Length: 344
Image 1 (cartoon, rainbow, N blue to C red):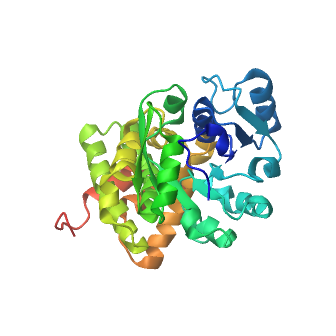
Image 2 (image 1 turned 30 degrees about the vertical axis):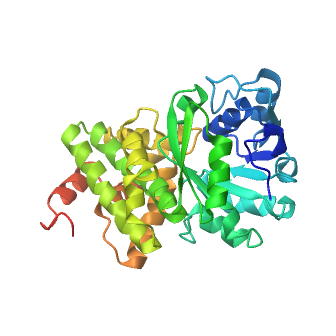
């Protein structure tokens, strides 16, 4: 069993897999707490920037990075012999990344996923993908980290509150203590699937909210999208067996509100530009970082059809993204749907 983190920071070996903005911010947060972090970086240029300039100019340019971060392009170095492995890669490469990690993961290692999304082909959450690829890792050793948290603000030391969820309370508490600091408060949760569903679908709803803002539809429309989006989040969560109370928490309404209203949200930005008349192809060509909601929209749309559940906002986002439907047509369709009880 891993030593309790309250003893000494050098008693726990930590690897972080993924050096996008969120992975870099979390790695730096842990490094500033005194942990030495082996950070797996996909891009050679980013590895050299962190090594030589203590900056990730591509994904997190505003933050000076701790000397405790040791960047590497070798995934074995980042993973082998680690007590905790934090995985922060785009959802569409989670399976490939897990396959690369597989030979080097210690049997007792705790895996933490901070990636948000639902895989297109399998319709699995990120934890589901990890469980499928890494069956030798016990479910008790898998943890989800999520909540309202922009990477830039975490990197700048602004107060942030998140949740860590696991089926095993010991694993959740251990990760809680490792990450907690005066600027980064961590709550535990025993509903990892609910936390994952909230973290995934909020990105789809954020695109919808951005579309409303891009069309200049006003604050009433944005509030309606957020509120009814929360209903769709709960509806999909119920199919996964999630606790409905989870969606009233940090990984549900908390993350939803932030992503639908914050100007640092990539998914909201995609929506704004769609509302302004840009095509999805043009928007994505201009973005180096991934807007997870785009790929998750496809997963959620197909999953809703498979399960026979009604997710009208998500469905309209799909039509706008992948069927070139005019956003104003989608707004009209949503506003003129058959009338019904709010809680139906």
